Image 1 (cartoon, one colour):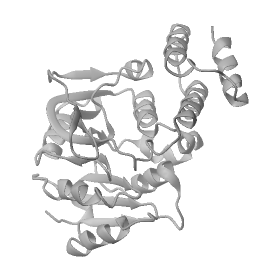
Image 2: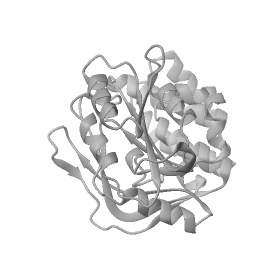
Image 3: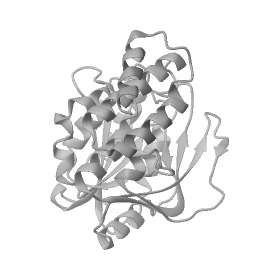
Image 4: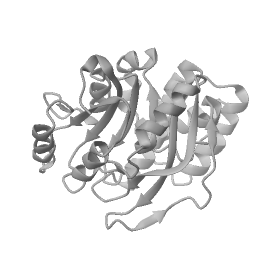
Length: 287
């Protein structure tokens, strides 16, 4: 369904880099959507070194009014790529999906828009996802699909089940206009978590999880996060903690809870890196 930009209800925001094995499946999931409204497909192609760009261009030529390819002048990283896509979005809502994940329900967008239109106290909604590996084998799927709700405080305390990126739809609030000005976002290792925290913190809205399975999250060696050395991942997690402490609001009780979460998850290894020592000392001072 291709209509003028002024009538676009949903902007599908896809970021991709070296996803030649998977990007076609992601795009097919976008194209199969059946809606009563118009949507656009924005693909941030971050100068892949494989054939991702060529595959995206093939689809764009077939659907020139529907698909738009966005790129910087050079590789700008996942944070910059996402902000570039958001800055070009025209829709009332933003639906996210990385180029190595995909949607499996043709009515996904319609269901999410219908919910958000009727529930103004929610700033976003998601749904259940199946986790698969690079051979399409299922590694995780929830046994009981029940409705879930999350506030900013829940997300801060790491309660965020079934809100993976490929399931998320946000209202295009004014907070998104300022996202590019938040310099810390470009340095965030877990950009999706910080996006959820930022929007719920500044808007006061909640996230609702529709109790339906509508997307697949893929874990593979070519993934941006999977390619990072495990030791560097831990350092990024500590860096994320510092970003969290310096840029978000929290109570004294939440400080203690955050300390327990991060010590349990990321400090159970020998602290030999100077930056990590500084981060640990920062956390201890919060007590």
